[in-house]
Image (cartoon, rainbow, N blue to C red):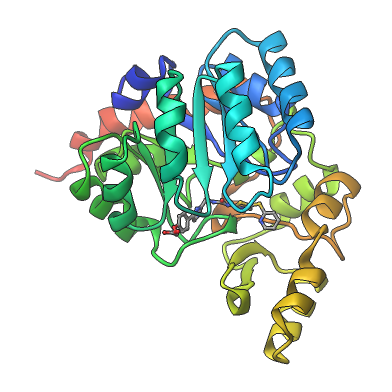
Length: 315
Ligand code: TUI
């Protein structure tokens, strides 16, 4: 049993949240993860409301367990998608890439559990005051849009800064990571990259193979020049992106170059021109398994470690 403040808050079996990755975390993955006893999360990305509504209905058709919707706050549809989640009485809302303060009160009044992603202890404190139920402390090891502080440094500092449960994210892919997160004072973990390599995930097989082939040095970060750092696997697209930034390209040029790249990788499997967003833990991902097998394996491994740990000390 891995009962924590997170399993209690969400009414789930395992203290594991699946990252709400744009394009990747569709109803197929989210419902499979929720059905497995962790929290599946739909990635709303930049998608319009009608698409998100359809996806929510599909999740509900495939599991009766709690699930979440993630809204990256730079989405042009962010406000509308929050309204949709309220109308649909979605159990959990996670947010990323910004400050969700204006959305917390209306979502909470609708009975939604609100869990923002933070990259600093200061924002975690502000969001706790604004009514957040928990926060996800995400380190720069993560894939996609990232902050500047490593998970190892960020998580214990966020834990000390707030009283609400803290979920660790960035660099987690197995039971060792989950046990380590609990040792840092977190109530659970969020994993993104690891969940791409599941059977239910709709990401193109080429994307999954690229993660399987990766090692700990396979990622790089682009987008610093426009204040929007994104970690992805090193490929021709990422190198060209870096070269463009080094040439001092304008913000508009950089944005235009990057637009549509994630979709290209996830749906078309274009590993040359697409953006293969993934975290540094990609090197630890070695198989493609059903979500249920993965969730149970991670939980079992963490439990075993926590039991064995005292015996590891030499007396
Ligand atoms: O949101 C993410 N990761 C994402 S969203 C995304 S969608 C996309 N991105 C680029 C191109 C195409 C599609 C891909 N990856 N992670 C959550 C996260 N949030 N990481 C870091 C933060 C964060 C950073 C600063 C949260 C809050 C924050 O606060 C700044 C402020 O406003 O105070």
